[in-house]
Length: 171
Image (cartoon, rainbow, N blue to C red; front, top):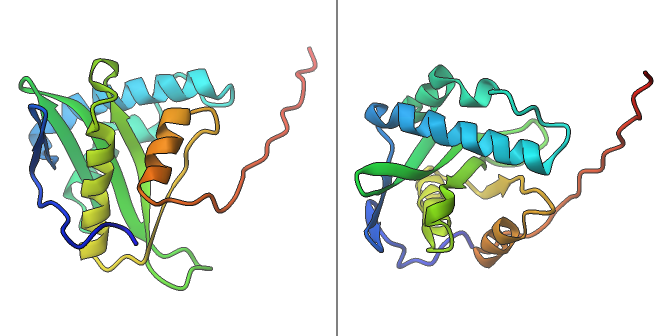
């Protein structure tokens, strides 16, 4: 079950934070947050470059804001975007039905632990449900305990583990 039947309608106001669909006007603030997310991921994972990737590219983010099979939600507080979630719908070749994928969910450190991330994910889940998606996936770092707890609290279950071997450099 993705969400209870009495799910909230968006936009939602949570502790002086408004959760809503992103607009083109939010683009630069989302880019800055996505760059922070990239740096956080780089700190958690030695294989992730701290340099901006395609996922921080304004054109790519804008494509998702405007996309029919993609959505971006933002958390707005004090007149600025303090968090966002980004996801899309696809049907991988081996899947029986449409899959929702949550690519990003990020909240500024000063605004964490207030339920903002959870509400951003709930907004994404409602959007997926309304689009006829049957399952939703997200990749979470094993050492990101708060995010793991949040997603599991929303009903997500672990279905696989990614293993990695890093070869020592030969210099």
